[in-house]
Every structure is written in structure tokens, then in C-alpha cells.
Image (cartoon, rainbow, N blue to C red; front, side, top):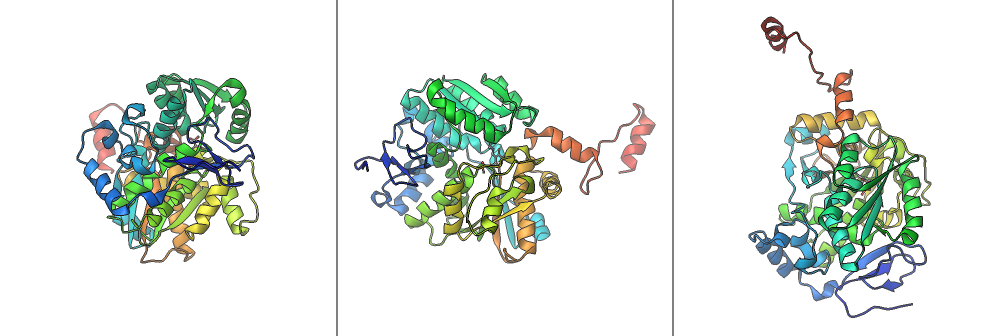
Length: 426
Ligand code: F0G
């Protein structure tokens, strides 16, 4: 087995343990296993890291203003001149007491990743993935995507001066997300198949076509997504909530969050770990089924849900994510599309807003509370993964129907009396 010793970080296969150079183009081990970034944490001191991260908040340097690169000591050992960054991260953490009361918990905060430059958490992974791609000298990067990954990759690739290819499922990506990939100049392939097929095809063809794959199978992506947890915990003065809740699709966040939390614990920055709940859409819930089945196996399914971002039936990060959920004494559940859309309407109505997949976290919280998995005195942070404008069709459709929280538009004649009457009716 190859052993790599003296370096700031290296890649290790989570299946066979083989070690690989940090700056290689492999995104999977030769054995097929997932790779993870490893660094020697014993060389770092938790207290001084906390102070360094805090001090950087006063700096105007681009690498300090990014909510990803401010935590660079635990992200990637790159020089400032090597970064492809857009001041990503620094997203809001909003207390929502009325939604806490509705869900039946003592505290609820929403971490709104929709506030990233392209409108989703994917930017945190892409600033790292694309910076690494440029360091490797890759001239073309690629991903398969349900929409947000392609929007983020297209933006960062353009910023980094690289060619970009994205594969999206034809007819199953929100037009808003698709338009971002087109606008940022990606060669956009609408594949007549679902996300899982597109990702499989891409992974197979990437070496032959000279494409560096930036799906969350790429371990550097996850190092960037860890910073969601770093920001949340820092905002809570390193006092962990009882539960973190996140929607799950390809399970990159699930893997990244657990890695981040375990690293903070190992560094002594956290003295206890929060628990992690992952929420899937019922029609795309292989992870929830594997959890219910005691982690015996992942049975891929043909996925279908209105929350198209998480319409994934064969999540690539399953091995990392299942280990992470176990390490954090987590739970995995699924919710119906109608529950997701009702939860979304509540989040939207609170003035914050999110795309459908993101609202699975609130829908899941309600369910976990009802079933007693989460206690009534729990302090909870739910992650909203994408912006409210990511899927305007789903929102308009909801509000034009008979749904419980619908706020339909009122069409009126263009005269004073009609407008007076319509407003008076409100
Ligand atoms: N929420 C949103 C808004 C997403 O776009 C995604 C994934 C997820 C949740 C699931 O996150 O994969 O880390 O479990 N979107 C990918 C894409 C698959 O192609 O944009 P995960």
C-alpha cells in the first residue's frame, strides 16, 4: 500500500486505505472507493485556530472575506493567488421562534445557504473544487447535476478561465437553474435520462474526454461544504445545538457535515457533538430506507419528487454519509412532497424563502418531533440549501392551487373600484 507522509494534506481511500497525492487528478481510488482529504490535526491547535478565524473577520483580503477560505486551515492548503473565489459563504443564521413553536421545539434557526453567489450551498464546494482543478492544470471541468451544481460549476469555471460541461436530466431541472448554466457559458447537455444515469455516464467518460469531475464524489468539494458547519458553530460561539437538520440527495452535505463536526471535536473546539438528521423526499429516499433497514445495504431506486434538486436514487456518497450519521447518532427520514411544499410556504412566508428541496428540513423536523426522535426542549439548526428564486414554477404552482398555505394572485379589472374592492377584501 502506498504511504504518503510529509504533506499538509493527502487523499485516502475510505475502502482500502490506499493513500494518494493531494494534487492528483483521481476523484476515486483505483479500487472504486471514495477518497477523503486527510490532514494531520495533531499539528493544529484548536484555540489558536478559533482566534485566527475570528481575526480574519476584520480583514478585507478576498481570502478572508470568503466564508470558505476564512477557514482555509481545514479546507485546502492553497495559496491566496491560487483561489477561484467569489466571497462565498457568510450566509445568515436566522432565529425563527414562530416556526420553532409550530414544530414544537425550544429553538430553531435557519442557516440560509441560498444566500451564496449562485444561490445555493454548491458555491462553497465549487470554490475549492475549481481552485484545485486550476492548480492541477485541468482545462475542462464537468458535472452531472439536478441544477444547482451545474449553476455553481459554470460560474466558477468561467471565473477560473476553464471550459465547463454540465449534464442535466432533460425536462427535470428547474428553468431558473438551467438558465444559470447557459448564462455562465457551460456546454449544457440535457440528457434524456435521470441524474443517476447522467452521473454514471460522466464518471465513465471523464478520463477519455479529459474532464475533471466536480460532483461531490470529488473529495475537495466536501472540504468546502464543511464550512457550513464551521460558520454555524462559530455563530453559536461553539456551543453546539442538539440537532442539525439537512436535506439529503447525493449526500455530499451529510458526509461533509459529519467530517467537519468530527474534526472540530478532535481539535477540542467542540466539547460535544450535535446529532444529525437527514431528510429525503419520499420518492427519492434510498438513504432513509437503508437507515430503516439497519444499514444493511443501499437499494438504489428510480427517483421521483417535486423537489427536483434531490431527485436522486443512487447517492454516490452513501458510504461516507452512512458512517457520518452513525458517528453523530443521527436519524434519516423521508417526507411527502405535499409536506415539503407546505413547509416551504411557511419558510417563504416568514420572509426568508427557499427552494422546495431545502424545505424538506422543516418538514422533517416536524415529523421527527411528532415521532419523539427530537425532544421538545431541543435546540435545532436546519439548513436551507437553495434560494427561493431557484424554482419559481414550483412556487407559483403551489400558490395558484388549493394548498393549505396558498396565497394566490388576484386578477382584477384595471379600474379604481375593482382595486378598492379587492384590497378591501383582504
Ligand atoms: N438541496 C439542494 C437545493 C440541492 O441542490 C441539493 C443537491 C441537495 C439539497 C442535496 O444535497 O447532494 O449534498 O445531499 N443538488 C445536486 C445538484 C445533486 O446537482 O445540484 P446533497
